[in-house]
Image (cartoon, rainbow, N blue to C red; front, side, top):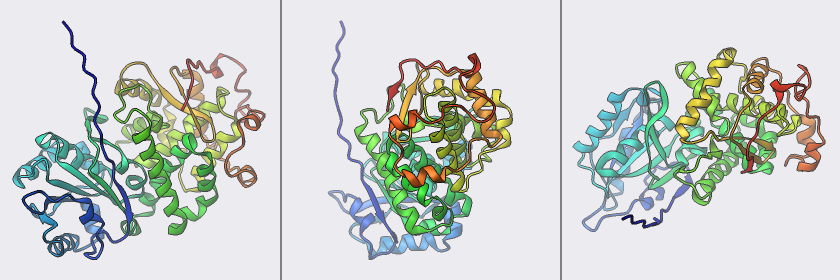
Amino acid sequence: MRIEAPFTCTWTHRLCFTSGVLDPANPTLRDALEPTADGPARAQFYVDSGVAAAWPGLADRVAHYAQRSAGRLELAGPTVIVPGGEECKNDRAQLDRLLQTMAAARLCRRSYAIALGGGAVLDAVGLAAALTHRGVRLVRLPTTTLAQDDSGVGVKNAVNAFGKKNFLGVFAPPWAVINDAEFLTTLSDRDWRSGFSEAVKVALIKDGAEFGRIEAAAEAIARRDADAAGPVIRRSAELHLRHITRGGDPFETDSARPLDFGHWAAHKLEALTGFALRHGEAVAIGVAVDAAYSALIGLAPEADARRAAGCLRALGFALEHPALGDADAVLGGLEEFREHLGGRLTVTLLGGIGRGVDVHAIDARAMRRAIEQVAAGRWAQCQRTVAARDPAGASHASQQRAVTRGPSAGPAHAGPEAVGHVVQAEDR
């Protein structure tokens, strides 16, 4: 006897943009919390140590905000400072500590864990919240460009284990995500830059017009022009949110993960460098590699791959990292990516500006060549004339008439090394 009973659940994803979220006059956070029948919403704040250092007195601001929000918000305990960066994801003791603080605060399923920090802290606190009573409500206050335009919007929570990125984790949608532009002002240049590789990534596979806008604004963004950066962050967050909520696979039960374009190499590069590479820096390199490979096998025009790498370069990313020197080690990331996905390998590649294509096989020799060429800096020439002529990206027909040879190493289709084996390619 077998009984099958399909069912669906409805989730609401709340994404807000504001500035000065902890100003008592700003109602954004209060309005996102739902009081209980017995009184105000109970919440425990978790703050990234890097943010706490950059914003002295932040714990006092939290306490003052709660005091001025009496009747709507009640603190469950003192603010908990969490080590920032990958440290909180690499050390299992940090996860245990987070769980202990949630137990000590007596959080229940209607309580809130409010995580304020970069993507790693949001990940770790999110996992602890998801494990506590099988799900304490999570409110994310991302404080980096990468967390605001990508990871903070997602439904994943994880820590690293056994030398593998995000090996332990769960899918659990946040109760709310509140992007506060004020927190971006104290980022280092390196952390400011890191988030924009994810904006380039999602635009390349989802929105050619947006890629053109990023391309045109890249130098201003690199100079930290908030007027240029703000719309890019918001559009990237919107594109990520739209894919999660309308793409039909929010918990990634299928083998395809278009939002992981460039990520199989990025995750491997992070591990190979002992996480010295920021995630956004690794994604920039991974996107350049996959774009180059797409051009080498004839899937995307060479001009588009050059535009992708050139835009990343204009944003300030260095693509020629020494870790690319061991191409075989980088290629090992493909199998790890497949294991992480489950089932057959599915990699999203570039079909042209604004269009992703899923493939289920990779020509190792062609990919090795792409890695070597990116390492040598042979794809990062800016295509300013192309961008100026058509900022939204050329039509597919005109793109296909573009030169399809790779960089000066020779024809991309001149032998088996450069022939990509693409099975059941699917537009994303």
